[in-house]
Image (tube, rainbow, N blue to C red):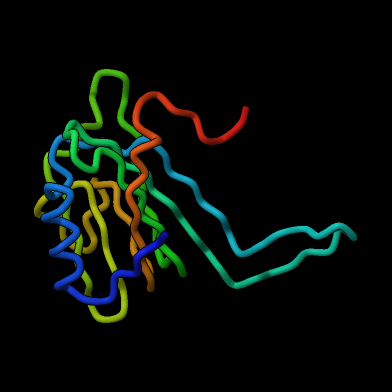
Length: 140
């Protein structure tokens, strides 16, 4: 069951519960845009941009966290080259005005394009322990 985050206090609770994303990695990133083509090949718009991010971490308690961002405002993703590892040591998660921001850097500021980050009007979370490991959720 998804739990909506509405306040800074709820962000802090999640950060404490998930160890501020220490020793975690972004396993999956899934984006669903608002555009689609229906059965009659007409273009449709449902006005929903949604992104889900699945994180795994090296802790037995709550090892897998899924965040769902609705009404995505911006997504900045910089894949690392093969010589780097995508280990997250600490993340930034905050609310500024009407947007929630998550970034994979501890002291990230709005406008920093080097980090992986997302902003959206709504955010939800849930634990997914069944998705630990080298799991592929999207079919090839």
